[in-house]
Image (cartoon, rainbow, N blue to C red; front, top):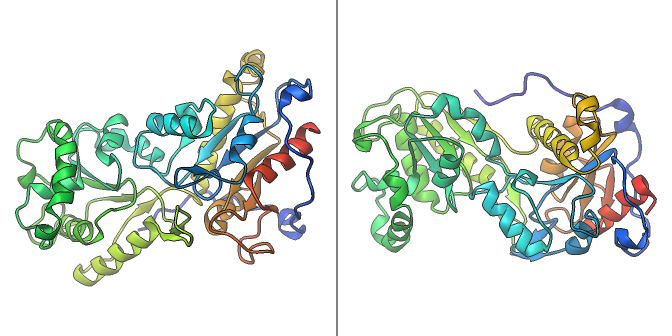
Length: 387
């Protein structure tokens, strides 16, 4: 059974009827200090996608450096509440915040980074002490351990407990061995005395798989046997995906296959070798839950800032935002998600990533189409603050 949101938030009909805005010439970006304007309790917040909007690979794009600096005051304090809402991941939010701070030249807090796997922390109470397997690039087991899961192994480590589970391992020993060496300390964290004889209770695909052939093989072994490879067919353990992007924009010119493509491959194969269809839960954009969570985080950023301090006692349960802006490059993910979330979300589509069209996207039209993230921020500040 696929994951579904119980409450479907409908996009207002009036929003669907109105024509999307077109990009118009903007004034050159100017820092707040040139305007002598100190925003008081702004009634808007911003969510930025990262890949294809802020960065391409590790390189800032679209005037992102200038755009983000406009959201801070002269002292470096945050003036406009914003966060990064990405389906990417593979490292703890604290690590990603440090990397973004270094690349973008502004101070990014861990609370400003919401990754595809961030909702996994809500499942800690269910699987805290159970044996789970984490899949993906980066540090998937470290991510889950930081969330409070106490008995987690990466799929690299888990596969190492079963001789010959990957028939192609002889051709890629260097890759697997390097990863296992890096994660030796995590292996020691496993509380189970014999991993090869204990059932896996859940699998979390934290980030993009770096070895599809091995990972699909081991996942099918786990899922079709009830959590214990090499045994007979059993009840499938829960399977969670951090996102379901078919494609995303990376450093290469054209789009790359994402976690959604990997999920399709796993599902197609599993459904051919198991009597029951694969059951899974996908998080990440465009899930409306992600946008609701982002709204709550933006509110906390607003309340904890200098302009929100005086409002904490009187307005903690109120809605501080008239508008929340989602700036993304992927119509089916960023724009579709904002449209499903409805009011107060306003979607802005850039042409620096997955979307490169001249006109608006036909299936998932944005409220505004611009060339770059700098254009998007210019529009927002001009509209909201007359800057």
